[in-house]
Amino acid sequence: MIDNIGTSSIENFKAEARQLLEQKVQQQNPKTDETTPTDKVTLGNQPIDAGTYTAAVKDAELGSTFTLLRDLLAANLKEQGVATLVATGDGDINLESLTPEEATKLVSDDGYFGVENTAQRIFDFAVGMAGNDPSRLDAIVSGIADGFAQAEEAWGGTLPEISYATKDALQTMLQDWSGQEVGL
Image (cartoon, rainbow, N blue to C red; front, top):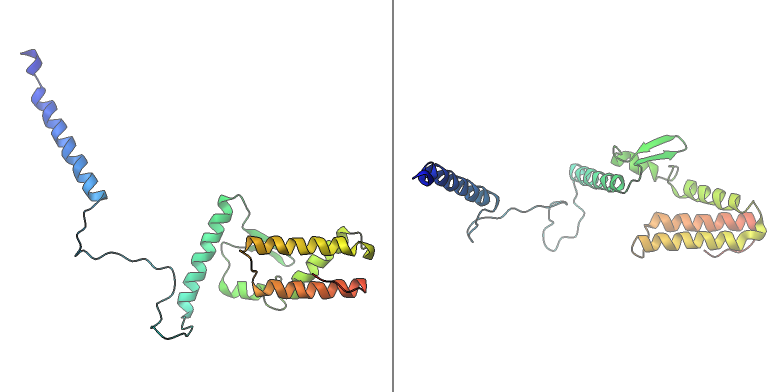
């Protein structure tokens, strides 16, 4: 008789708990039938009509795509412990708040990451490391060529066009400095 005291309360509690658990599982994993529409997620621009090969991208769409990529890059860099603040000659650039206009300015002809400015920084570093000694030209060229090869590998085999233009400008600088033909 003592065994039966409160047993119905425990059984009721177990039944209610089981029912709540089943409801929670159904909410998390709703059953769908074939007539239920599914959600679609896109990360790009609106689809272009078949047979049309135009770049009809609205500025707002491009801006949101840029922002998404910028935020993903910044988060990825932070996870790897890499700073998102880049020092330039004029100050610091925060990759987390970089706008498309600022990015365009940075890679423009006279921008910090433009062809000539970047080639000049690489040249100054490489020649400085060689003690400004033209007899070390082979070591300088080898180091720069290895750096570009590693960058190509990291980018999947092909660099952006601006990188090849920088490489060409760097080759010209090395030839002018050394008075010798240089092949990068």
